[in-house]
Structures are given as C-alpha cells and as structure tokens.
Length: 111
Image 1 (cartoon, one colour):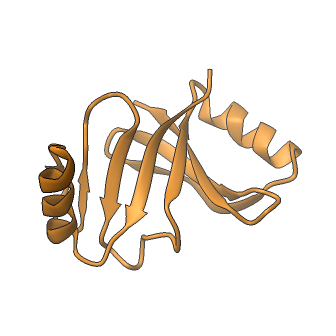
Image 2 (tube, rainbow, N blue to C red):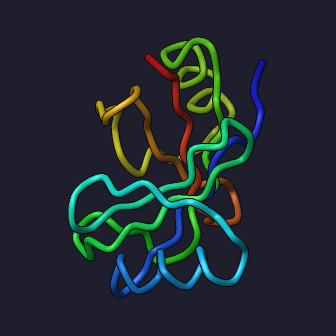
Image 3 (tube, rainbow, N blue to C red):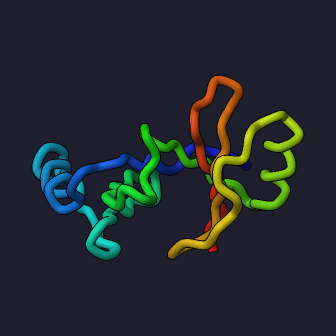
C-alpha cells in the first residue's frame, strides 16, 4: 500500500519555523538536531528542513510504502528520474525522484 504520509518543508530557521507552527496550529514539533523538526502524529506529518544542503527547493511530499526496493523499480520503470538514491535516516530509508513534470517527491519505508 502506498499513501502520502509526510510533507517536508524547506525552512530558513528551524526553531523559528517550529515555533510558528506550534503557535499557529497547536502542533507539537519534535527536534531532531539543530536543523530538523517534525510532527509525530502518525497521520500525515510535517517536517521542517533547515539545512540548506539537504533541503529541496519546494515542499517535498513523501509517500510511504511497504517495500522500498520494489517501489524504486516501479518508479524507474514508469520513467521517473531518480533525484537522490536510497539512503537511511532516523526511522527508515527513502529515495527521491522527479515526476514527468519535474516535481520532486520521496518514497520511504519505515524501519
């Protein structure tokens, strides 16, 4: 099963952005180091990427799958460009791709 489970936003300053979302929407943001924070609701969560070397140019939708390697093969066979090969992060593994319109998305499998 594949479903949208995460949206990662590029931000200038993680702590200030986290404070904004906490105040504006009542979200609880968990810090993962000085440049990353995220909601942890288990529904569609929001991540704040403050590291300019890791951030995408636009919001990054993340699709959860049960089998990362199988999803990678399907994405390649469908004709997508792989923007970032599979890598590990706290909680799982993911890869990034660009769809035919140039939108960057990620696919992740939880640990």
